[in-house]
Length: 64
Image 1: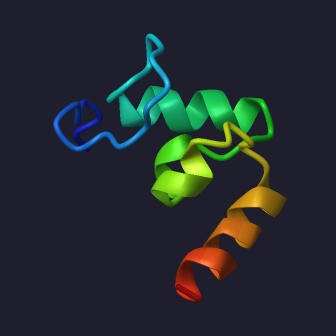
Image 2 (image 1 turned 30 degrees about the vertical axis):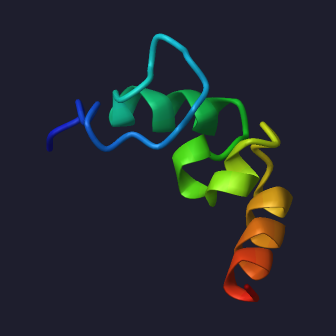
Image 3 (image 1 turned 90 degrees about the vertical axis):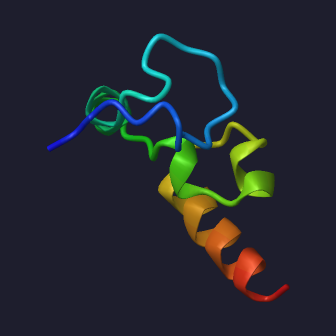
């Protein structure tokens, strides 16, 4: 599995895991969060990585 996808990483938060998908997902799972790349652009900019916000973002982005 390729875990270094810097060219397709949509997260805008600059961190050491940017573009390193496996590290990023593992980090956020340990923190009880969802990675920013799972969100729409608007949802990602809130920096709220909760599953509740992901659901809210999904509903809002589908309604547009």
